[in-house]
Length: 180
Image 1 (spheres, rainbow, N blue to C red):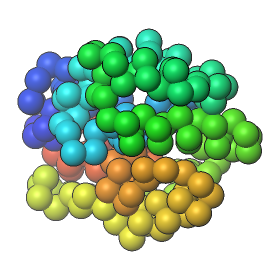
Image 2: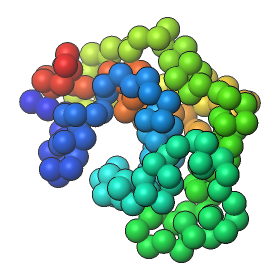
Image 3: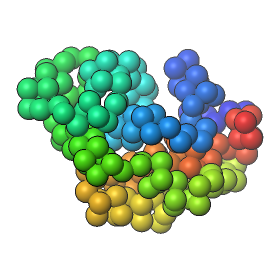
Image 4: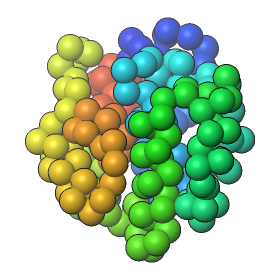
């Protein structure tokens, strides 16, 4: 039996089966995931998934070099776009993080995967209730990312990012995606 949340919608099932928990090292894709996790704060993941195509279009396919050059006019256009989650703080954080990565030539993959020694942490949960919303490791990563200058990177957002990017494998033991 799959992780229960996978059955919420066809989009959620496709995301669960094809993306969630699969180790991801690509810089652009990792930045996209971080942004989507930031956008999700306080909302459902299903909402974010439905808006992902619009975000890819509006945010230059999450290409850091392009986003680093977005200005106040670009931000105003994002905030006026009804296809997006129009939260000023979240959008400002995405643009600030893109500038930080671009200006300091940071590697999100190197920064984040170092916390798990470059290989996924495999958890052994038997029920959804056992899966934490954050961990000490996520809290440490969030703290360190904030010290580097990242915005909107709390421990819950970071743990979700770690799960989504495969740094942590939190598929339930009964889930066929556990070993995939």
